[in-house]
Image (cartoon, rainbow, N blue to C red; front, side):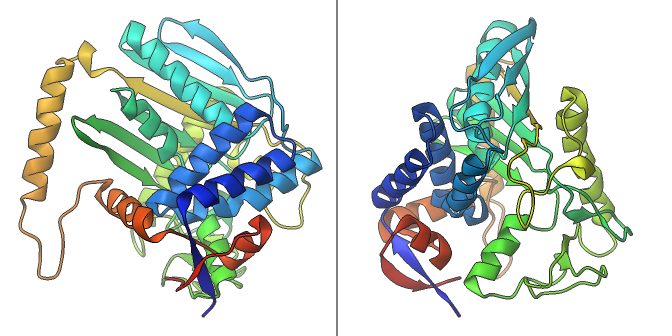
Length: 350
């Protein structure tokens, strides 16, 4: 087994910033991308964390991504708007769109914002959480290139198409759900390749459509739901495509230039995203909402677990990981550590 290393968060963040600055990214792009990547690495979403820095530097150098974009926002109605990312790093576009959704919701109760001419946004939960930190219920989604099969399909059709929801919890971390509509994200397959680990069963297939645990043979992901129920994940992936590619008039899943591999890195992919902010004050009221969230979570966590189990709300695992990594350091795979010039305490990759 290949070993990861543990790196203190401040050191890791500084290295990420230096790499992005060295690639020519604007100050705003560096800030947003570092914020999103560190969120993912802190809470254990390593597939969408700092391991993506080499890829982002590559596509900025190739011309696919504009390192110094002019991101603009346009209001289209009382509660709707569009953010044009100018083909820059998707993290800057996405944080601006999430902020715009909050601005609209403060006026109208709900803010819905589509993002166009964007690129890979990283972990969708980062933006849903940003909305929750502003005191609102947040939703973020995107579509991307075809790497996930349909239920009973023989080839990839949808992207991993995440759906992320977050809600504020008074005096505590947000309620946070960040899930791919595939069995796992494709970036996790790439991470497992780097770590030299076998995949879990039933999450990926080879070029013939046969299930495989070997990340080197994995050519296609399987939709969320497992054997007999993959139609659920496939349908949810369609929800992401509807709200992002179709609603925004941007690229549909089968039409994307693939994110990685021996592919064109000079042509922008015109990705679309979608963000929603809901202000609880305009419904039952912020105080009623806060009380309801507390009573709901207390009741949920009071449910007796099965032997050896633990009942958790969405986000509980992430905040546990964040606390542990704040003490022990953040694990970084060998390829990324080499790219960033990092050294740290060795850890057997888990």
